[in-house]
Image 1 (cartoon, rainbow, N blue to C red):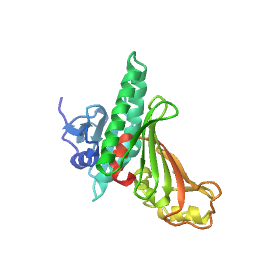
Image 2 (image 1 turned 180 degrees about the vertical axis):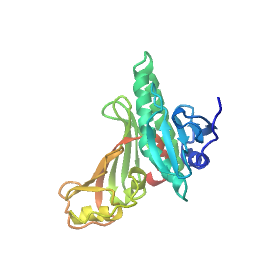
Image 3 (image 1 turned 45 degrees about the vertical axis):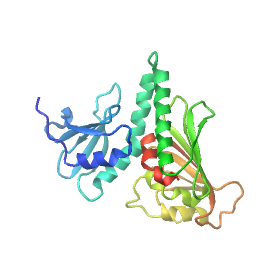
Image 4 (image 1 turned 90 degrees about the vertical axis):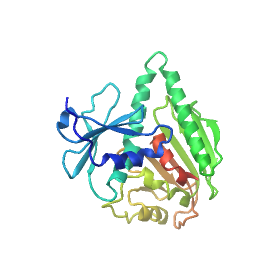
Length: 276
């Protein structure tokens, strides 16, 4: 069998995914049966695998190797060139593809005789890795257990806020909660939101919602005291004012509560410096 050469974008994408320090990503030339002859590479960290295909000079396609399923559906189509092409592809992988890979792999493992214990051990390892990464950035996380029995971490931020991250249910995804001044979310939201390119702020709602959508037009005003993530693909969530706070004014120090769901540990590791 002849293997097509690796797509030119692969080295840059591999480097962008390197935030996962305990499982480095490696790339090898590969062949995708549905893109015969196109440059292709298989990226793997030893647990998950992605196929990066470049069918022409302008496009990169990413296929994920979900368990018990041939990678026939394109997960991401993106521009192959440009100064931020690799970073944009990696951001989409961190936000949407890798969390689903983890979730589906965990669901398959949980159906086996010893699978539940394997899934728990994997998530304990994820929390340990995230905890040490946060410590490296100056945080002091405490290990906790969620109300549904999953492992988690809680820590204080430099601006007086607090973060908590938990494994939900059988461990399909992670959930996070922030409580503190709204400026503590400004560095994190670019990791959680799709690109703002081509979007304009929604000039509706209260002073509070406009304050957020002016900076992040991807956010959707829901009520005078609440905005939500667009949620057509994970992650989802919302940012809301605590009870009875006025909505007619907002600045960097306005207190908020943020709840975010369907997260992957890779995304949190990549965003760790913004969680402090």
